[in-house]
Structures are given as structure tokens and as C-alpha cells.
Length: 152
Image 1 (cartoon, rainbow, N blue to C red):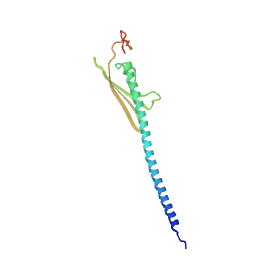
Image 2: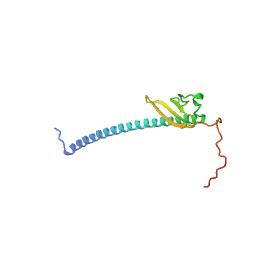
Image 3: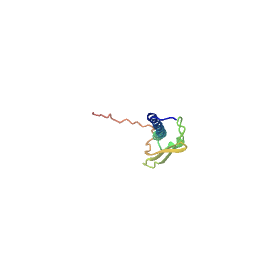
Image 4: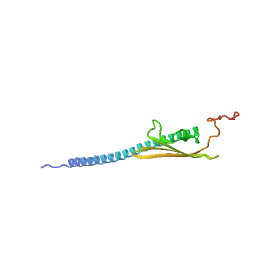
């Protein structure tokens, strides 16, 4: 018959407590890692969505600047009003709508950019008013007649 001394029973109890501590610690570590990985996934998707929106905003600005530079009155006759964007932005498509421009009225220009992300179609659009060009000169001089003196 084996007799347990008080000191050997304490060792077994300590081993049991250490084992429970290790199991609880492992579970807590696993839960915290799962939460952190979930947050990381959301952060990465938000980052890529932000980059896509930034690219779409840049493409919208480019389309509106082209309409402004070429003049809204004849832009649709010379250039396409919709289609894919040029490389390296082939995954984006643009569409322009130019309305109005009757005597003295500005043109209402709506530019839209669409793309597919995560299996869903996404889009961004911008609406502005652009005044018609006056005269036949495609690029009139924009310098003032007199030099402007500025005092600092």
C-alpha cells in the first residue's frame, strides 16, 4: 500500500492547477487571435475599398476636366460619352451625361465611374455645371491686361 504524504498531494494539486491555467490561457489566446484576425480582415477590405474610391474620384476628375478643356457643347460629337477607362484602369468604366446649354445657360454634366469589387458592382458619380465656351478660340489668352501689383 502506498501512502501519500501531505507534500506529495500538494504537488498533484499544483500540477492540476497548472494544467487548468495552461488550458484557460490557450483558450484565451485562441479567442484573442481570432478577434485580431477578424479585425485585420475588415481593415484590409476597408483599405482596398478606400483605394478603389480614390481611383474612382481621380477618374471622375479627369473626365470632368476633359469636358471642361474641350468644351461641353461639342464634346459628345468628338469623344465617346461612355466606355472603359484607359490602362491601367481597365476594370473601371465611365459614363458622361451632358444636358442643357441653351442660350446663356450652363451645361449640366454628370460623370459616373463604375467597377466590380467583391462580386458587387460599385459606382461613384459627380454632377457639375460648366459654362459654354464663348467665341471660336479654343484656348483664349488668360493673362490680365495689366500686371497686378501685390503688396505683402
